[in-house]
Length: 282
Image (cartoon, rainbow, N blue to C red; front, side, top):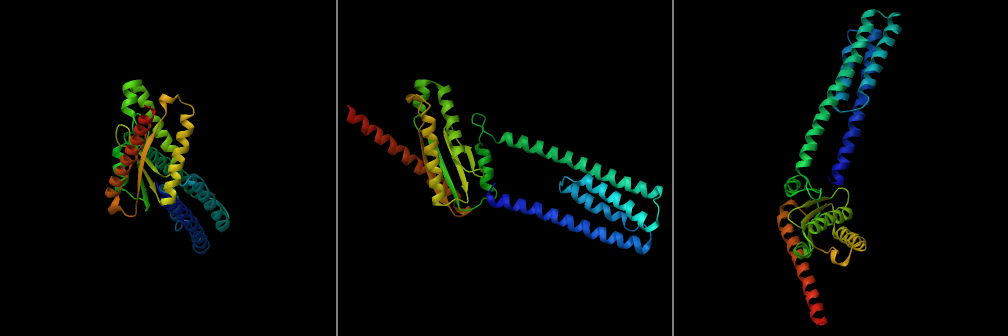
C-alpha cells in the first residue's frame, strides 16, 4: 500500500468520525426541539437509530456507548418535558441500548469473518520458503493501484547453483531466505517484495525517484555486509540487482524487462571481474 493509499484511508476515517459527530449533534438538537414542542417522544426516538447504525457499519468502536448515551438522553428529555419517566420510555431507552449492542456484535463478527478471509487470501499469496509474496500476488499488485513513479528492482543470487552443488540444497535454501530478509530490511514499509523464481526476486518501490532507488541499493549493500560478517567465506551472499524507473502503468512491462536485463548485465560484469582475477592469480 502506497503512502497515498494510507493517507486516503486515514482521511476517510476522519471524515466518517466527523460526519457521525455532526449527525449526532443535529439529531440531539432536533429531538430536543420536537420534545419541547410536541410533548411526545414518538416523533424523534427513531432518529436515534440512524447514527447508531452508521457507527456499527463504519466499525466505530463506541457504538454501544452511543446507544447508552441516546438512551439516557431520551430519559432526560422525558423527565425535563413531562416531569416523570414512564415505563414505555424506559423500555424504549433499553431497546436503544440493546439494538446498539447487537449491531456492534453483528458488525464485529462480520469484520472478523472478513479478516479470516483476508488472512487465508494473504497466506495463499505468500512464498512458503521465504514468507514474502509470490508471483501470483505480484501480478495482482501490478494490476492494482500503484503510486507512480515506481521503481522496479530485479534481484538474483550469484552462484546459487555452485552453492547447491558444493554445499547442498539446505545451504542454498538458507541463502534464498537470507536474500529475502536483506531485501525486506532494505525496502520501505509500503514497498512490495516478491519471489518470482528459484532465486529471483522482484521489488516494487512506489513513489520512488532515482535518489530513492539509490538509497535502497545502498541499504542492500549495508545489509549484505552485515550478514556476510557473520558468515564463513564460502557462505557469503552475493546478489546482482537491476532497477528501472517507471512513470506510468503503460510502461510497467517494459520497465520490468529492462530491470531484468540490467540485473543480468550486472551479474555478467561480476563474473568477468572474477574470471579476470582468477587469471591473474594463475
